Length: 266
Ligand SMILES: C[S@@+](CC[C@H](N)C(=O)[O-])C[C@H]1O[C@@H](n2cnc3c(N)ncnc32)[C@H](O)[C@@H]1O
Image 1 (cartoon, protein in one colour):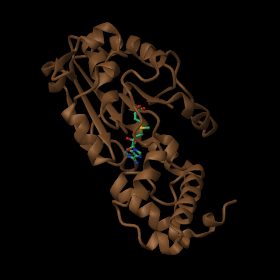
Image 2 (cartoon, rainbow, N blue to C red):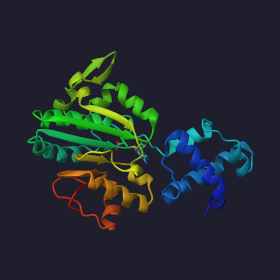
Image 3 (tube, rainbow, N blue to C red):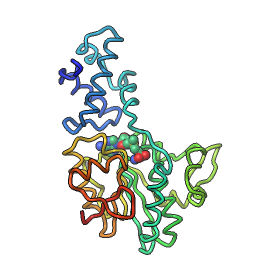
Image 4 (tube, rainbow, N blue to C red):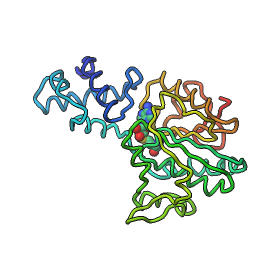
C-alpha cells in the first residue's frame, strides 16, 4: 500500500476540495476504495514532482489548483456520449413504446454530466412516445456540467451516434448540433447530489449510469433504494452494465427485457 494512504488528514482535505470545486462526490466515507487509492497515489506523485512533503503540498492547494484539476480529470467523472451503450438503449426503446401508451412520461437522468444522456432519453421518447406529454429532468452534482447541458451545443459526430429518427430531433446551429425547440420544451436540468435522493415526483424511467462506481457500498444501497422508491409501478431504474454484478451481490434483482434495469417491486 502506498504510504500516502495513511495520511488521512491530507486525503480528507483533498476530498473536500475536490467535492467543493470539481464536483467529485467524495463525501467520506462514501468514496469507494479504488478512488481513495487512485487519488492518494496521484497526490503522492504530484507532491514528489513539486519537491514538497505531502502535508506541505496539500496545505498549499486551493480549489483551482492545476493538481486538483488533473486529479478530477483522471477520475473521468464527466465522460459521457449520446446513445452510450447502444444495445442497452435499444432494449429501452421497446419499453418506451409501452410507456408511450400513458398520457405522460417522466424521466430522470441522474449524473447526467453534460446532458447527452438526458437529451438521448428525450429524443427516444419523442420517437417512441409521440402522443405522451414527456418531461426529462437531468441532474448532476457538477454545476459546470449542468450549464453545458442547458446550453446544449454538441459536436455533430457525437449526435451522429443516435439512431436516425432520434438524430432528426436535433438541428444544426453554428456548425454544431442542438436539440429542436420541441425537445427543449421537455427537458430541464438541475444541480443535485444523488446522495440526497431523487427529486420529488414519480418517474417511469430513472437513468443512473456510470455514477455508482464513485460511491461506496452503503451509499450505493441507499441511493438505489431511494431511486427505486421514486419509480412508478411500471417504472425502471437503469444502471450501467458494469454496476450489475455489484447490485446483484447486494440482493437487487434485475428486471427482464431491459438491459441492467431494476423495477420498483425489487
Ligand atoms: C462518468 S459520468 C456518467 C454520465 C452519464 N450518466 C453516462 O453514463 O454517460 C458520471 C457523472 O456522475 C456525476 N456524479 C458523480 N457523483 C455524483 C453525485 N453524488 N450526485 C450527482 N452526480 C454525481 C459526475 O459529476 C459525472 O457527471
